[in-house]
Amino acid sequence: MQISELLSDDSILAELGQRISRCRIDQALTQAELAHQAGVSKRTVERLEAGASTQVSSMIRILRVLKLLGNLDHAIPGSSPRPMQLLKGNGKLRQRASGAGQAREPDQPWSWNDQDRKGDQ
Image 1 (cartoon, rainbow, N blue to C red):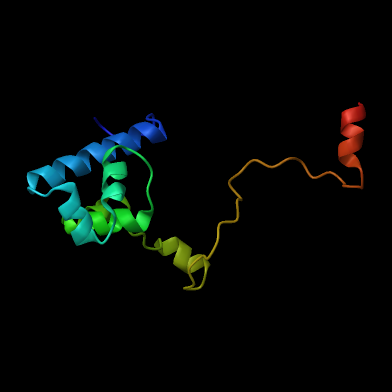
Image 2: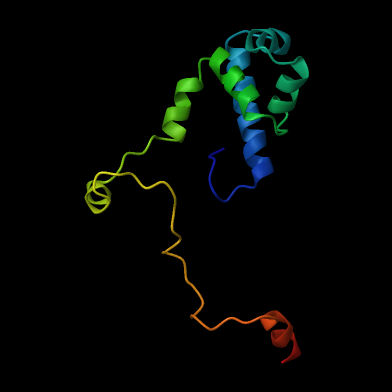
C-alpha cells in the first residue's frame, strides 16, 4: 500500500508495522531478538508491528537494528535556507513562522465583553 495523506493515522501505523515486520522476518530475526538488540521490550515490537502507536525513540532503535534508519533522511529531508531568505534576513535564518500567509480577520477595535455581545445579536 502506498502511504499518502488520504490514509488515516491508524492505516499508516498499520502499514508501517507490516513493513517493519516484513523487514524483521527477511533478516531472520524473531521479535524477541529484535527487541533485545534494540533495547526495547518484546511487547513494544509486537505493538509496533500490530500498528499501535509507540514512542519515536523506540521506533528509532528498532529502525537502527533493521538498518533502516538512513531511510528517514528520504522521508524527512533536511532543509536549507533559500538564497532570497538569506538576503532578506541579512544572512540570519528564520527562527519561527509568522503566519503571514494565513487569512486574518479585518482589524476591528477590541473591547471587553466583545464575545458576549456577539452572542446577543
